[in-house]
Length: 108
Image 1 (cartoon, rainbow, N blue to C red):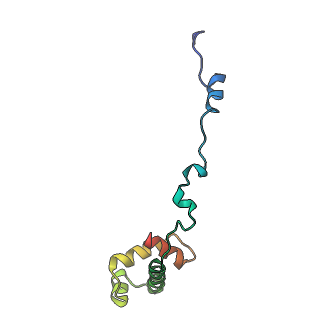
Image 2: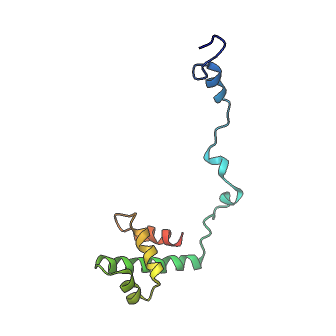
Image 3: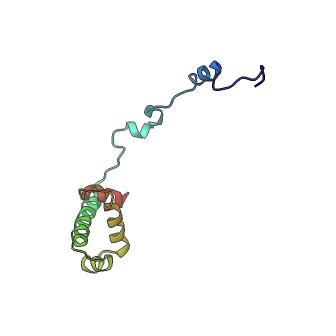
């Protein structure tokens, strides 16, 4: 290595220069809307939709535990096959079969 070359990893300037960069925090991403208090925008309609979805999730998971196929579940419940499929995919991530969490994922 030449005498004029500096290894950047060993240079003190490299490490002291990084400290002056701004570090982001959660507060940097809060907007005015978040501070208004009801940023979730929960309305009576969305509350009813959530309740209906939780009921659908309960039905689908109960029938799926009995070994029924998506087509059979859709036929018995009157739900769309894609909707039944979405519920089952969302439910795969929860070991305890948390129906409310699954309903939020389906609506998400």
